Length: 503
Ligand code: NAD
Image (tube, rainbow, N blue to C red):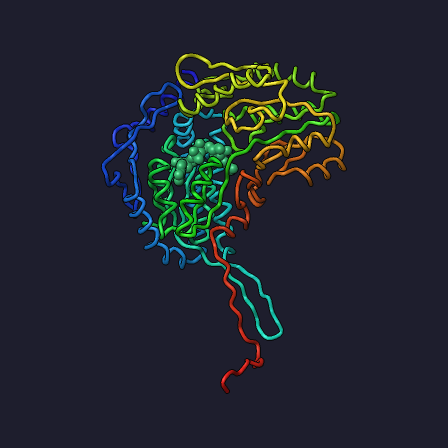
């Protein structure tokens, strides 16, 4: 039996229970259908086949989940940090134990290739371990003495929080948000993306098996404009951690205004990879290809604009075309596949619409630009050349395996092009000139920049974007800044003079 057939057979085993009983919400420690009894279907982008019915939660389910999270909050907040650490490590153990199931289900639900998803499941476990170890120091503060007072700061968890996640790498992103929230002492209501609900359910089960008290973590499936909106408007929910599109972030900000929600947004990007002629061009080529064509190009940090110096552009683009044409599109459960199908019809239509937009813009479709097969949402990895930065294909987030190549003359022009977009998530700079790298990174408008490297995540570092790419940072202590409130307590150190009125 081939690896692919073997994986399909294993997947069938994992899916049986979902097919039979559907994907339920989890509220106050109980698996429940939606209060309305309504469901929706999740289907695989590989062949559009039915995977499971999913509880279609709405405002009433969100209300029940938020109340459960509020009721569970004091006990979870006051639990000893060592115990919280223990439980989070047990969740990580549970993820490792079920990593294969998570990876296979994630691939089938999202179309992401197994070669990347098996690592994503394990990265989810690392997120829990990292924040488990940080839990005991979450409340630490500073001593700030004044001449008359000893000021002591501490941090307290903000309360029940809402976590809203997208479909591109749903498992990893859910752990990334939920782990620090729990480590900080917050309780959680999670609303996963409607297009990829499978692994959020598995993660919830792992958490409960690890001994999490009921109501600490609740799961409500449903649509954004319905369950998602209700979560952002709920008065018991003190903050919303959101990963998704920039315009959804803007809607959430409006929806949360009446209840003064604290928001943390990780949004879209149109990230430049800038290749100067003095760079190590072989490594630059590998990195540029990896950062746009891995994960189906459905990644916020993808290097979707290649800015290449004109002195090396012909040669670099020629090598690029050769490699892009060689990328293997195929079944996501085949371990040799590099690109799987896009998540769903609407997204497929959006991505493929840029093939004609590119031609209308006057760019050249140098590779790809067509669908693969007639079933499922497969597209060929695509490269647009002869583009300029004013074109739609250079300005809009396509969120697929599609790269736009733009030439530049010198540093000044490269910087001007790099910054001339609404987004500012990441940037990748390739040069061996140290002074240039220092100056360029200083002026590049991005929350995260890698020099002579692809995106390599290091959990203690801040992750997030500027401009319309986001608000706030994840990682290290930055995550706790979001999920916690600062408190200052001032103790008089002696008998300082207190103004006496009416004496
Ligand atoms: P999306 O904004 O359409 O949906 C994300 C989530 O928001 C889903 O759960 C959806 O149901 C919910 N939602 C939709 N409307 C809502 C509303 N009015 N109120 C509350 N919730 C609502 O995004 P998507 O298409 O699922 O994901 C792709 C986007 O996510 C891309 O733009 C990508 O760049 C971005 N992303 C960003 C990061 C990052 O770290 N910056 C990481 C991954 C993905």
